[in-house]
Amino acid sequence: MTRVLRYFLLSALLLVAVGVVSAQEGVTFRGYHKVKRKETIFGISRMYEITIEELIEANPEMKNPDYELKKGDILKIPFSKNAAPSRQAEVSEQQTVQPVRSDASDDVRRRAIRLGVMLPLHDINGDGKRMVEYYRGVLMACDSLKKLGISVDVHAWNTPEDGDIRPVLLNEAATKCDLIIGPLYSKQMDVLSEFVKTYDIRLVIPFSINAPQLTTNRNIFQIWQSPTTINEQTITHFMQRFKDYHPVFIDCNDSTSKKGPFTSGLRRQLEQQDIVYSVTSLKSGDENFLKAFSQKQQNVVILNSGRMKELGIAFSKINAMKIAHPELDITMFGYAEWMGYTRVHLENFYKYNTYIPAPFYYNPTSPATQRIQQKYRWNFHTDMLNILPRFAITGFDHAYFFLMGLHRYGKSFNGAAGMFGYPPVQTPLQFERYGNGGLRNNTQLFVHYMPEHLVETIKF
Image (cartoon, rainbow, N blue to C red):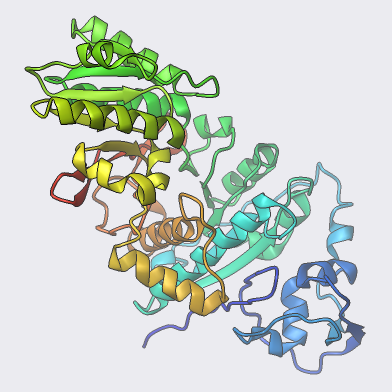
């Protein structure tokens, strides 16, 4: 019999999902609370020193997917079943945490997967808004897995930048997680790393934080790749794919550019392999600009800026040159930012056989992307943030990948290439062990805009 997915969606300003708690018989309420303007479920639970789960259990209407917290609502306030969060925070930092005993019969492949999300889930700033969208994508992945008979218990905690994560880790539900997604801030890593090691929980770090614990903690998966790692991988793949091309570097005179480490590193590799390249500038006259291009070889053009303004100027000069010299064979090699310019430059991308290195590919025309964006509107009555990558789709891909992996392989899942064939909507993942420590994502794509008006993704 298909197991039931035990989670629900709240479409209030702050979206929080928690594992469903069985209703208690004969519960006594402390009293009632009249909701004021701008109050949130999280804030009300903190006000009365109860958990979000307890507040929702006392007010079953909150479980309705269309529920919205409104000014004037009357909420029942229950007594707390456990020590209040403010009291928990007073527990000594030296409190000993007892490891969970391993139980062979408690196999994650044969029961509901217990997922914890520890991210800033609020609407106060950009971090919170992006993470709320990411979290919504996680919930949508759980919904998709439910249709495959895979049950997930979701517990979520708001862990803002100025918050102390230690009281959260005293929550019994946290200790029972199989997988935790978070944190967003480096300063929360020390205590969370020790926590997941103690309780043998898999920890997925989804975004760009400093996590030296990866070198020693085998329970950590780090998805984010540093700019240095990305540059090194991109140069390696460039040298393999374009070894017979004539590279042309265009100086864009962009004082804000951060592409110098990549272009200088690529030039060093070309020089070490005795590959001749040319350098020109957007300010060069037509004759000098033309001299940088080979008449006999295929040319691959690299700008030292990722900005749309400079890219537009480069395309204008190249288009004018091609009119006068149609025999020139030109390929463009760009940056992930360029995927945000498709409304303006898509035809130029196709025309010049453009390659864009990136850890993701957002394809607005794919049926999978359109389907998830439509479901997002249905569930949350709004569109995804207009930024790349789309955070909700990132959350969907991350959660689906790890939850399916745990369901199929249990705690032996290591995210290696080929473990299962999940076709990501936007964000492919594959991991390799980092020394004797955790696992690090090493996925990179070349998004290739082909002259036939097709787009292929080349995965490395």
